[in-house]
Length: 543
Image (cartoon, rainbow, N blue to C red; front, side):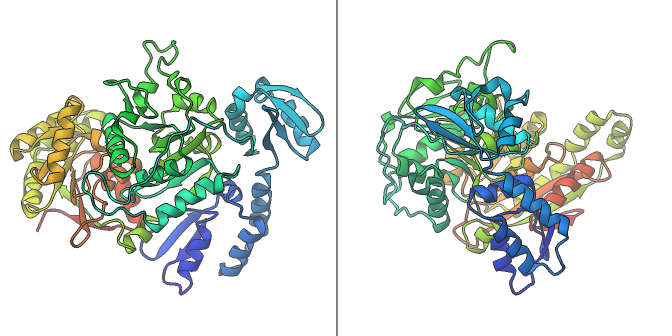
């Protein structure tokens, strides 16, 4: 663990150096916390950073002498990356290592053995090329991340040219510097060093644009995997708006529509659908129906665990992961590393806020009481029911009304988890509600009206947590959430971080019930936001 003082005159230089080999964990105002882990070191190694460089940075800037065991751990860990390489010879895949004993260890490991064909000699093992991903997974578990140099197949050609003016608004369209950098690093001159990996950018920073830029560099048929139908249609809109691709070249593959086009956007849900738990995923063959040259995994931190098996079998295709966070609640960051690829690019949100590319946000936690009758009901309830009682506290309604009135000229999202609560809020505010049963056609119409300013207040359930582009939303009111999920908190805050045309200011309100389990879970979310550097204000009521 590294602690970095933000008031130091060399802070920015140190921050930029650390970003290459350490993960930023917390970034409150004065002291930022970084973590060096095996994955962060292997990401660094894949980007070309050496142990000599890492130790030089630590030695130069550390206030105290670096413990000897830390130096040895870093040297040992980073030295493991690339000890085993995956290469291709005459269309066959081989594991190669100069370390004969390591080859012997791999050949005799029971977890890896099912995916091997035979040992060629002391340095080469022929593997079943269909199990390229499985081998990388297993070797990562053993602590030997594979450097994959086996290359990729060429997908079917498709010209994807970025427009200089958008199609819908005819405004000039320019990539931001960091978007170009991220795409260039992923592309890596179209060498074996590029073509797979993850780009990490905050919500509102334009990850979709990075995806379009990479598509225009590769000029190949592309499969894009997204979290839901709304996200799929937003991708379609962006592709048609900002590239020369025509509408008939872009298809949606979801529960509602099943089109296969040169660019196809499919939902995670349709890919993991099966009639019975024991049966195969019936839509998995979408990966083989066209000659894809690139697969984009949007919100890759939400990639469903069953899809990892599919991804393991798609290693011959170029793979791009896009995400605002590499935090996975199931802890499968290692699978993302080995199957999608190492982290290629990362920009802290604070930097983009400073440059004006995302909005400045202030977070408020407003605590309300329970009346006596509700307090009694809460006291005798089980833990799960207690959370629901606290979350749906009727006294929250007065606060919601006050916030909406305070921000009557703003664009307000009211976000919650319990549908009956949201329906009541929608009736009280005379505002539309989007939830699971809302038809996609109606959702899109309401999102459009909100964007146009016809609707100033929109009530949304957790269906709007992910990949919903509402650039003008500048106020979010969270009335209930999921047990202190950091991931959910980051995504909900992300709904209002798109840059604003005037003062670039956003407001995020969480309304919670005092002295309840909801307050305990809210503390976890509060800690996460404070550690990320957001200003956090606690109030008992709106002044």
